[in-house]
Length: 210
Ligand SMILES: [Zn+2]
Image (tube, rainbow, N blue to C red):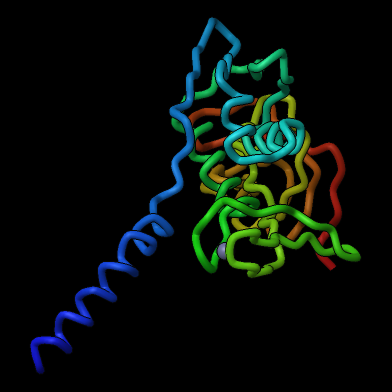
């Protein structure tokens, strides 16, 4: 390669480089300021986060409440959750929200806006013009919904018979023991006792095997 050719290339690279680096600077949210106070959790710089994301505070709030399975509200520049929630799980949900509702998948910038077209939510990038539909993944079941409690009534399929002749079915992570039924039945049971991952249920109604 001739020297002048090389120099010309170098010059071009230098012209292009700073812009490229700038464009790919990672988008960073303000550090979350979260305090647990007894049975509540206070997200103290919530509005700083929604300002940075340029999203409606209520939109992010509804997302967080649904994902975290807790009540809560915006109070001034803060959000107060009526439960003890770890800062790391709030952080994780905000990352998910940012990836889903804010970041352009083409250029990686957060300079986007949400547009509703028919029934589809579109993310339009003001930086590069890319458009994509927002795929709202079904909210993960909150931990609260993954826990069985005494007094819950559940429908369960009796898939096995235990050593003592009791029916046994699976519900979430639990083996539910139901006396007085047989394999193949679907029963509504009220949970009477839970020990580790074994629960005991009393039949409310029973639908026999066909
Ligand atoms: Zn873009």
